[in-house]
Image 1 (cartoon, rainbow, N blue to C red):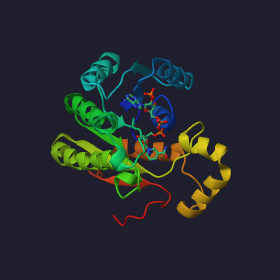
Image 2: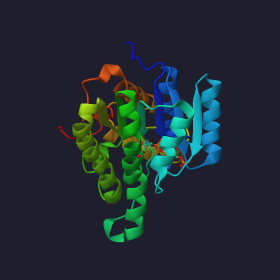
Image 3: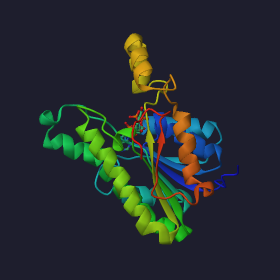
Length: 258
Ligand SMILES: NC(=O)c1ccc[n+]([C@@H]2O[C@H](COP(=O)([O-])OP(=O)(O)OC[C@H]3O[C@@H](n4cnc5c(N)ncnc54)[C@H](OP(=O)(O)O)[C@@H]3O)[C@@H](O)[C@H]2O)c1
């Protein structure tokens, strides 16, 4: 299948490590030119170098996308580097696990900013550039816990990830006339070297074996490559009739029927 991604320009927000870096690698392997960002200048510089070593045409910027004005900075950076943008992947996100009663206004403000406002602001700033390019593809990385209840302690994470799915649907309706498709991907538990699940598997293998046996019907964690490949497909012309969708990438970990 030819994804027709060669020469397209992609912005991956939150790409210094983990799923975001694998998405950047996967898009680069298909011939995309990339602007990647993360908060840590050192980490994003290392990611840029490693992608360049693999032959990618990539630029990077150290940027906290939760900060006011980050969208405009990202749009300026991609314009300066490549003069256009075709793809935005909103990957950056985090979790702050605690019972709702213990959450604070600051917790909510910070996590809504990191997981939701960041991608709302950055993707909005991409729209004029995508219109100039004749269309585009926006993909937000949500979670299966944006589609169904994750359980106690996850009020902030669940809410922010659900909000991304809602936003994407409405954006998809409004931007269809501009040939801009907007989708979300909902990963289940994804293990990548050095990631949070990997650390837990190393520090407590018995508990994690029990977790896998109880929660992951395919008997293993998902990989970051498996998420990245779906994002690549959704970003490509082969997904031209998919917009407003949320795709689980979870090896049937989630229980929701829709
Ligand atoms: N891993 C899983 O099992 C799993 C499951 C479901 C959903 N997800 C979602 O998938 C996404 C990636 O997960 P992951 O495990 O790869 O996460 P991760 O290891 O925390 O990586 C997140 C990336 O985003 C960057 N980032 C975070 N906040 C940022 C900000 N405000 N501005 C710019 N960059 C920022 C981080 O770099 P800096 O720290 O340098 O900024 C890093 O490059 C997240 O949205 C997560 O919620 C993950």
